[in-house]
Image (cartoon, rainbow, N blue to C red; front, side, top):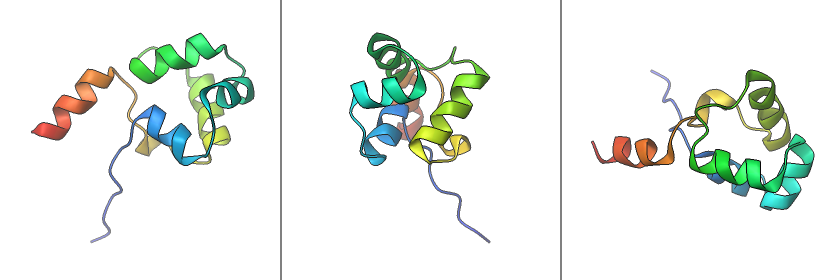
Length: 78
């Protein structure tokens, strides 16, 4: 059986890509405020933006948690 990598937050994916908030926002094509908001709650990110995030972060989006960060933290405690 192949182990599935755990999901990581959008912020962790950006950090793993070695990008600052400002650098990532520019590459994705959104404002710093928008990306910061998404890192707290990415439940409303459009598919086109999800695809751009995958491209910029060079990380499969099926391993990035998209939703409210509070939900991510609580799901890890279960």
